[in-house]
Structure formats: structure tokens, C-alpha cells
Length: 172
Image (cartoon, rainbow, N blue to C red; front, side, top):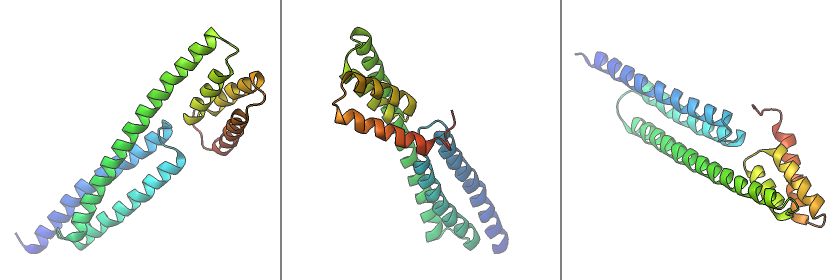
């Protein structure tokens, strides 16, 4: 086999590996944004990191050979994939924990509908889950029960601000 043919085969091999990995990572970022596991900001940062990996990978394919750029592209992609997986795993666990907290606060409210603290913590948990409408409802109820709560007033203001900022892109 001639050196030119082996170089072409090598570039094709790298492209066949590189393109699907890039597409899978981009799809992963997009679907996690749609599932609200990632915020728009987090997805944008992930796509920016992916653009760097894309640049390294394309440079490696164009330059040819298994030199430093190829090794950097491979290591960078592996780190990006592992960090993304770990982050998503952590975020899903956090969402599950918050869902169980919400169930506990709702049970406390069922036992005592005048429990301002339970409404307050329920609103905060919904706020952390980016459920801004539910957060506003719970925090308004907490303020009805305890109008002097500065913490609830601050959380309600935060929920309203975040809701107004997020409504233009939110997919339900």
C-alpha cells in the first residue's frame, strides 16, 4: 500500500470514528436541554466545548497522522464525554432527591395546611427544579401565612424573575 493510500485510509478511519461521536455528544446535550436536565446556559457551554473538540478533530483529520493533535482531540473528547455523563448523572440524582423532598413537603402540608415553612421549602424545591409556576404558588401561600418572611419574599421575586427570563425558550 502506498503512503498516500494509507494516509487516506487513516483519515477516513478517524472521520468515521470522529463524526458519530461528535453527533452523539451534540444529541446528548440537546436532549438533556429539552428534558430540562441542563439549562440553556449549561447547554451553550457544552456546545462551546464541543466546538473546541470539533476543531481539534478536524485539524487532526486534515493534518493526518496520529500526532499530538490527534491525541489531544481523543483525550479531549473522552474527558468531555465522561464529564458530561457524570454531570448529568449528578443532576438526575439531584432532581430525584428534590422530587422526594417535594413529596415530603406536600405530605406536611396535607397534615397542616397552615404550615408556612412547608410551603416555603416546597417553593424553594420547585425553584431549584425550575418549576417556576409551582414555586410562585407555594411561595405566595407561604407569604399569606407568614407575611413577615423576607426569605419567602426574596425567593418569590427570584422565581418571578427566572420565569420571565426563561419563558421564551421553554419547551413543556
